[in-house]
Length: 230
Image 1: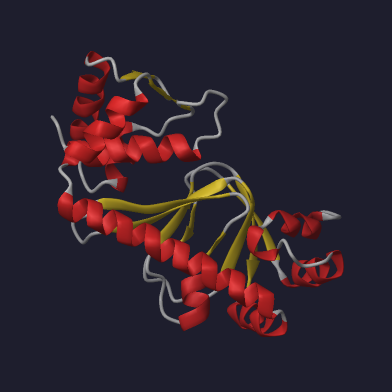
Image 2: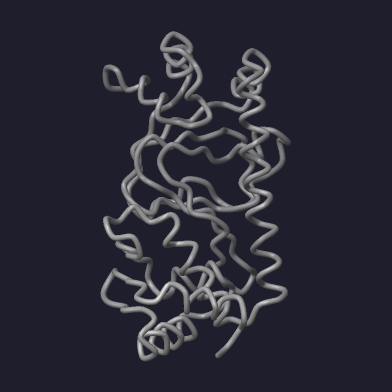
């Protein structure tokens, strides 16, 4: 571990209320990992229970069917945590986790993570809030799958990406995920995403280019997501 690396834990939202001494103690118990883009960090159904803090980069939590169909549950960015489900209930991994870009992670054994929660009660409350947010997100997606047509789900996902985009423009998604990556989030196929983006471009609602999607008419996009007009 490079000198001072443990102090990067202050970037993790779950640990942000801890002081430098506490962060240093946690950092000493972590294994620090540099992972490359596309590298699998956790395998689905793997019998491990460590928790991971992302200090640089981002990862995606994914599931794979027996036939090999890929579903993306969530993208998890720097400052966040993953692996906490198995760390808490000691059950096998419910999803695979793959690096979306070169990332720097801190891995902590589940026993030490559970002790941390007991020793610092405010951290336990923040963890509960995090789990509630994740549950709400999954509930929202389940509702979308059950009630929305594919083209509505694509419009809704574009709106969601605008809210979380770190690009300079207010309605610019850059770098944009590939059509295949969007499809894995929405339980559809790449062709459906490509067809819908082409249609939205023709209607003057978006401008879709290589690794970039610009929303030109936000209100119409919202209307199409809500009403299902096709």
